[in-house]
Amino acid sequence: MVKIAPSILSADFADLKNEIIRLDEAGADLIHIDVMDGNFVPNLTIGPAVVKAMRPYTGLPFDVHLMVSRPDDMIPWFANAGADIITVHAEVCPHLDKTLAAIRKLGKKAGVSLNPSTSENVLEYIMDNLDLVLVMTVNPGFGGQSFMENQLTKIAKIREMIGSGAVALEVDGGINAMTGAEAVAAGADILVAGTAVFAGGDYRRNIDALR
Ligand code: DX5
Ligand code: ZN
Image 1 (cartoon, protein in one colour):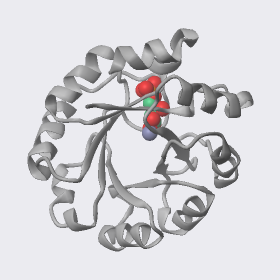
Image 2: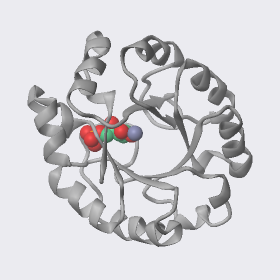
Image 3: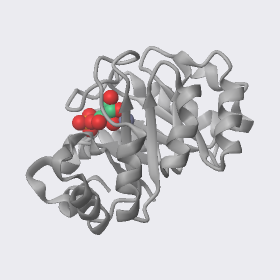
Image 4: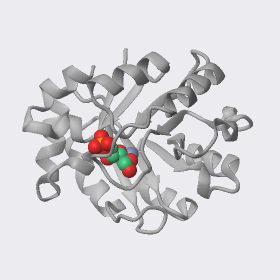
């Protein structure tokens, strides 16, 4: 069964507490938190203090997507703030194997995200330290962009690499009912969606439509 991870990048930031509660009540499986540092991507969003402030309002796993240039420094901050999954970008981790091991050592699930231009080959030698792969289907930085169809091939290749084992395959960017179905057909099992979950305000209906 496919899991839905609403991205709070599209939430009302002045009302995050209630947005989290509403997503939980609407049937979300995970809360996707987009952390941007204004350097790796041209946008600046959420820090560990905000993650910590949200933590008491849901029991759902916090799926923290680090779009930052120096994730190694920040991993402990988000682990302590209440993250359950911490995902780093392969493009900024020269010692990816060590970075993933450090995340697991903190008791968290370790994820790797790939930009649209990054090959799935970077995953080949790190499978043993990996809990999740996050395929970006837009160039990260902003919500509301169009799904890149050429990433479907990559999703299918990664599904072949991981088989039906314990590694989750998550897709992020431009996901709606149509592109979500394409991603799932290619092998994805977690769909991140910002625009499609928050549009119109009926979160339950939107989540059901994605599922
Ligand atoms: C993009 C973020 C996504 C984004 C998705 O940089 O990583 O999580 O919020 O938003 P939509 O669903 O609007 O493409
Ligand atoms: Zn994201």
